[in-house]
Length: 155
Image 1 (tube, rainbow, N blue to C red):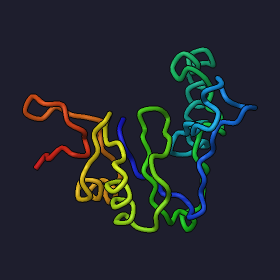
Image 2 (image 1 turned 180 degrees about the vertical axis):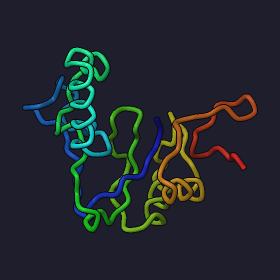
Image 3 (image 1 turned 120 degrees about the vertical axis):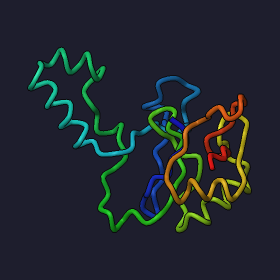
């Protein structure tokens, strides 16, 4: 759980809660969390478990059957042209707009002071490492100090 880059179409607008679908009033306008990866794969895994061990076992293991609207769309690879930073502490909500290059994404994240963990941000170079590599944990302990996974120097 932390920060991850998701490849999206240039015009992707992550969905937000409306008055009609918000779980509570304050959620209106907030991003709807969405799992990365495909709904089809999640449904297949659920059904394999249900067929092998029974529906009750699958529900006990997964909590519920996967729902398509809880997953990012399954765009063709040629449409996944832009880089977007997500927090994945929940299922996943964006912390940036979509950008054509990792460099543009890292610059925006550093310039806006985007959250790397709690109230911490990161430098352009730290964000760029993640923008190019795809993922960092929320935080780790280095030398007895809790630091964001993005800012951590593990070399």
